[in-house]
Length: 360
Image (cartoon, rainbow, N blue to C red; front, side, top):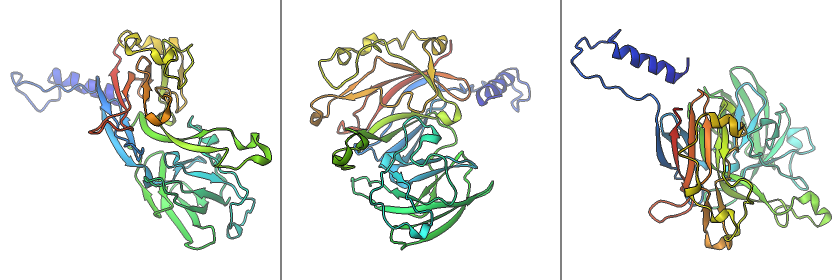
């Protein structure tokens, strides 16, 4: 029995005065709706996207975490490792298999986590114990690079995981064994050498930055390729990532799905408005009728577009798109984004969205 059904049963018994401590039927009973029917929320990520904001749609609770608090997330008793794409963390695999022999990343190509949440296609992919990796620790909130380290997982069991990491020249060497956190992932900061709490126990989506490649992939340019200069250039972009690991899925109602999404202010799609939204009329049955996705980027970056000229910082919010979000307890919510700028100075990085529990 899920948590909402259980609470509903308790409320029913309360109304029947069965098992209640209050024996006076004349005294009013405060009945609290166990499910948050809907509201409008603003996720304050900040103009530099320095915060990750987790949202539980069933309660409306938000949890804000500093992007710079972690680099790696280890799947509990599993083989998946997530990297913190929100601070441009990237990983490469050296040819050496001896940890002490790894001393340079020259000629190596770094990878970033895919946006779809598939643990087999992260920057690391399926974890290989005692395999050395080199990690680019990404950037801080001011855009400064944080350096690189080599690391490897030396062992894990049902209770704990063991790591070894150091600077590329072998200095600042650390071996660390830590117990698993209670959640599905244990988050760690190599930069600060500590385990950190990131994901709340219950969440449906997180507003976070992701590392997005711009321009050509380097392999298409042959000898002219200069990674990070003329190819494989990555920037940060705001994204709504759903908790696909716990079964959250999304159906997308876009009345203009056949129109091209681009950055031309005059394009037909960029002329559409919220008046064309189906938000008010959608039903739970539309979730299957539209077709759903269980990818973590089922919402992703599809709700906004920066328009030309990009230097002007003008964003088009596709407020006519409605996302039907199905959580792990089979509750359905309709969600639409209304703004990207907010706060006292109307700065970037303040996504605002409206959501509502679907009761029919």
